[in-house]
Image (tube, one colour):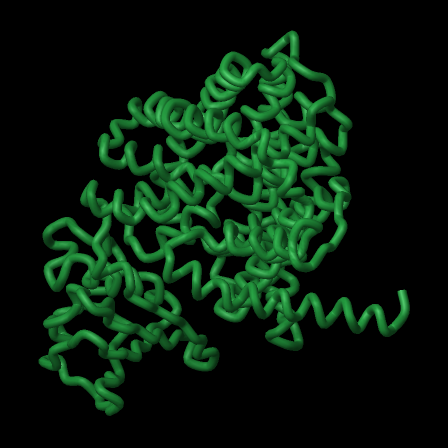
Length: 504
């Protein structure tokens, strides 16, 4: 490659990134997951689009897709709050294991009986589409506050279920249907146990080291954190365990370890996560040949309908009824089983393994993901409100954090949106934990130091200073008041929990 060609490639990549970043605004306004926009960019650049780029390297796509998934899982783990998922770990684990098994069985049976696929191909499709995608789910639910149990269950499930699904797809693609199913289950459990042990060990050791080693520059901490997360994946995979589970658990431990320069680390990881998503989806769009999809539209719709209306709800009911989860939450979690990057990436595995009919499997999975994301994505916020599991006012509460290193604290920037129940609440009625306070209010372009009697209004911007020990509790309390008003916590809504009371 000459320098001229390199310059051209850099120009194209930068333009694609800029278009993708601008497209996030479109997806946020329309309620569609950004993955569809990125896939569209890739298709437009492909052989049937205006770019006319010829690309059919499934093996390269799989390798890059795996690398991107590692980054996405690491970013998701870093943003997972242990306090939210701890109470729902049993139900999330059940969905990731038993739920996946139910979904694979129902979907594979439908693919075999209704569209005539051989059992091997049917099992591959059933396994491929049984993994939910956290990025797709929360990109459309980011404006709808959910109960902690729903949000935590969906987040933990999407982080856990990639591992067993990858194992199943690889097993079905290399050996076809397994005669001794109990052997496969044993292998899955063993790989998950190895991955979990390595992920916890690497995450704990990494957090221990970063808290005790003073690096010469703050910018090195984000790099070190991501390196530790990637190392957990590599160690898990080399030990014949689940690398995906290892990276998620290691990242979750790092994210809850109160590391130095954490806001910078979180922002760096989030940027890498976006970059990974953009690159992965654009590449998947390039791999698709649109003119070959026509014959697989009906099979994709049939399989997707069974998955959405039968397999997913059945798996949710089977797994969550023993935990006495209300039917409203079960309904939302059934509909929130969005498929995104993982199924499309996994659909390249049979292509690389040379499985007969693998191109058709990829096309069916691609169409299924696109069509049913279009159907489910925009309707999720409305369904949450219909089930009274969301409140539009609290959804838009924006909280941004900046570190105050020398003061060992954080400066929180809070915006009070339209419809928020924080409107009309006095500053003193926020009942923030000791060690935090509203230091400045910006209203109509004018800033002033508030008194305890100052009443907050829609559109106000607040600057809240919080020390490290109460930073999370202060944010929880602010979000609780945005959802439930000044009586949040006393009336049981908002789940501001122990933090605000403990500081008193």
